[in-house]
Amino acid sequence: MELINILSREMIIPAAKISGKRQLLQRLAKLTAEKINLDEDLILEKLMERERLGSTGLGGGIAIPHAKIDNISQICACFARLERPIDFDSVDDQGVDLVIMLLAPKGSGADHLKALAQIARLLRNKNIVEQLRQTRNIDKIYALLTSPLENTDAA
Image (cartoon, rainbow, N blue to C red; front, side):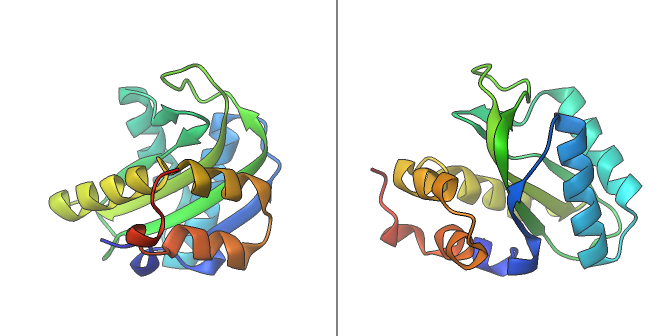
């Protein structure tokens, strides 16, 4: 499950001015709802449900909020680079400034997990993370996120 198959340029927010976790999830839900023609309140509700189970803030300023939803046909992703880190109840108590949201169909067990693993692997690469933090260029962000992993060895 490669990001190039589930993320489009239109789903990248290169410099979001966000002040909190709920506002961020609302912004991602709105953008995604427009793209996949689904109710943004439903997306937000599912994301918040998942956050109540435990924060999807991985540490190091990175979060991967995700949810499974009945009414979508394929996995989709949305990326946001925040202007300033926000509190996300992350495991390391650090603010979050890089976010990849993932939505998957309800019955997509293995594919959903593969996509989460792919994103986590990509964002463990310190070089990519640093470059994501330093650019607001959508094409560069897209290229960084969708490059094959074998070309993005961890620094």
